Amino acid sequence: MEDKTNLFIEDSNSSDFIEKVIEESKNKPVLVDFWAPWCGPCKQLTPLLEESIRSLAGKIKLIKINIDENQSLAQQLKIQSVPTVLAFFDGKPINGFTGLKNNNELSSFLKEVLEVGEHSAESLKEINKLISAAEKDLEEKKFEEASNAFISLLASSLPKKELVLALAGLGKCYLGLNKFDELNELIDQLEDDIKEENEIKSLLKSRDYLEDIKPQDINNLQRELEKNPNNNNIRFELARNLIAQKLFEEAIDSLLHIVENQKDWNQGAAKKELLELFSLLGNNNKLTMEGRAKLSNLIFK
Image (cartoon, rainbow, N blue to C red):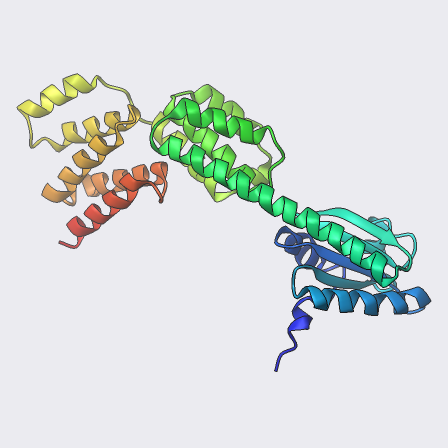
């Protein structure tokens, strides 16, 4: 039978420190025990740490690092003596101590680490609740309310995942309000690694897509279509201009009409346009889910 405590206690080194400590600490607190084979107090402290971690049954993970075998890492983290214990959470050191501690002192230390983790978890839950509310406003085209909510979120310190969601949400608000200058300014300020996130790539694609639409008068297009109801060129241009005006449901109906009556018209342009629009709206949008289902029915009809 596998010893589950091995999941909570591991050795690490310079090559996997990022994975085992920094990345793992984004899920739960991680304790790092810096020790050396020649260190007497280390031989006393490490068993106490292991016992405490086992008793917590996975609430905190323990990583042990031999500084003799990982001198560059020890220097980088400014480890000047052993034993040294550092607690990491959300990718950052949050607490630590040097030297030997007894059971009571160690229990107090671990309690503080857990409290930080639990407090952060509650904060994260509240942040995600606010993001969900803002995204609902965005879906309902309440662009001003949603943008104010996203801006407020961005004024606080956010973990990377939530930061990306808030940035993408604000960007979509700017798209909804046709504030392309503000959107471009927002994007220009982003770090390169943030720009590589899928949500931001999707935002950039949506921006380019909307900027490519050449605006025409919707009323004129509708009058022309009434005269020529079988003209897919007019219907397609009407759909694109409905998208530019954020009249997404009407645009989807127009494009689905083309697919239903002439599936391969203009090399499948209507289907491609629908997929672009679904990407703009997002996979969780009600219009996207309903539109994809209707499109699939028409394609496999």
